[in-house]
Length: 90
Image 1 (cartoon, rainbow, N blue to C red):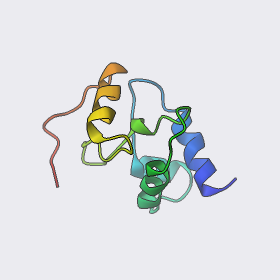
Image 2: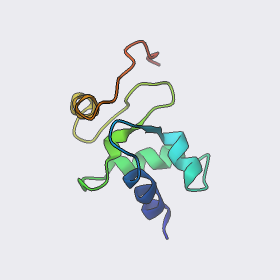
Image 3: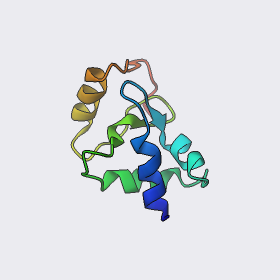
Image 4: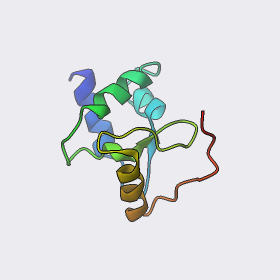
């Protein structure tokens, strides 16, 4: 299985209302330092079966999304995830 396929496999398993960080996804695929690569892979994903909107930054910010950050925030809220508005912005 390719690294990309492994990332997609992990992300597909994130339930509605829950999130993982890019770093947690990288650890789950056995490449703990490849969190930036996880972000790159997810940034190119447009498959609605892979809920990449459920992957956030380690500092609690939702991070970028290929359909826009506001869309990502809206989807997460609709799924029941409570966004921490006090997360630091770096």
